[in-house]
Amino acid sequence: MKMSLLRFLNFLSKTHRKPIAAALFTRSLTTYSKQSIERRIFNRNSLPGHETSFGYSSTLHRIIYRSIHEDLTPKHLSVEHYEKNPAETKLEQDAARICTLLSTHSGSHADKLLEDASIKVSPSLVVEVLKRLSNAGVIALSFFTWAEKQKGFKYNTESYNALIEALGKIKQFKLIRSLVNEMKSRKLLNKDTFALISRRHARARKVEEAIEAFERMEEFGFKLETSDFNRLLDTLCKSRHVEKANKVFDKMKKRRFVPDIKSYTILLEGWGKEHNLLRLDEVYLEMKYDGFEPDVVTYGILISAYCKAKKYDAAIELFHEMEAKNCKPTPHVYCTLINGLGSEKRLSEALEFFERFKSCGFTPEAPTYNSLVGAYCWSMRIDDAFQVIDEMRKHSAGPNSRTYDIILHHLIKARRTNEAYFRFQKMSNEPGCEPTVSTYEIIVRMFCNEDRVDLAKQVWDQMKAKGVLPGMHMYSDLITSLCHKNKLGEACKYFQEMLDAGIRPPAKMFSNLKQALLDEGKNDEALNLARKINKLRGTPLVVGDQK
Image (cartoon, rainbow, N blue to C red; front, top):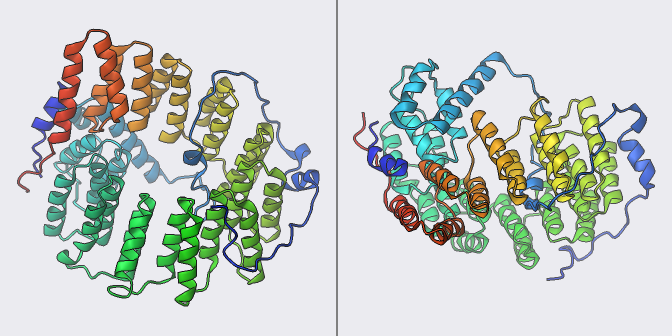
């Protein structure tokens, strides 16, 4: 595939609600003393010693709770395994090397370095690199263009879909349409491709285009089924277009599709995330009217919705209703309640649900322990949270990078930023705890908020050296901080790097940078930035003639 990238890359470089059921059980939880529950969770005398907190304080660093604590409770829980076979390790090492090269060099120089690196290209390596470059669409496209010329490259659906995901994030929808046609000619299209395109349109607030992508599957020879309909609903709901999803449901119901229980639970989850219990109740009643009784997934979604709306007593009553109907709560349900009650500082109840979880025969795994870690942290009992981490190690259930993300969030919230940085530095030494992009974002933002921009840049460089690429929010934090320190030359450098990755800057950040330049009399630089932004918005990447 010959991509006409030069033109593009050249300019870049230069209501109080009652519970749903009318008659819910109101029995209270079995009462344990707080101390006896905690003794059941871990025996303090048997645990390895843990490091005490340092007690440093500094400027309060605010991090969005949702991004750290959400999705701790996947529907399918599995034990964490840290031992990898040599082939997996080699693939990850090669992918990291490639991403590091691409993030620090560009154009033909990057191509030469890739050639000199003598890395053997394989379909699995291409997919791994593209996934790691999902926040840098232009770089992902450059890599794909280089890789397809290498021995060992093979076109497959997974690599195309990974590229489409990266390009969708920078709204290169015209190029994506060309890639779809190319995939069709190679007989590599599948329904996942259209689901990806639909999701990227929805995330870009192009709702009608998202629906159109769903509809176009028929044009390419795919038969639309209820599962595809559900996927569209899920895409719209998870992109915060729940009202539109509900309208699509009403329009298509029984005309084109017969909804199943999953159709209803998707809408229930959507309204739950919007904290709209009135609409949630309406969908629930419609579901029951159509003959569907709540199953374990439905109850989990309802309990989660009430926890998000801070109706914890109602959530607990739903838990009891679930048990009374012989619908056994899953680990997901327990995690939801431990998370919710912990965030409300109802620690003793959260601990009791953890104890009930174990008494039901479940073996705690990383997501469950992470919920418990979060519960202790919300009550600022961080030393106890570290004892839970020791317990995780003893049972080979973690910790993982998300465990430390939770700890870091609460240390920073408690103004213990030096300790947060100390813990961050130790993460890489623990199996399964390599910092992720979200971890780096936490620490970079912490230093930016404290006007310690040199340390923020140091962490940034560590991240890039490991082949982890920053996203829009990280660039925004660092550039804004540099503007506040009047380091406009450096701010412009990172801004250019952001554009080189194809990332469109947030309007507010760009406005602040432009104004800072104007205030310093740097009118030409401000005008140059404005031109680059306009060109980025108006210059799509193009697919040329295919091989």
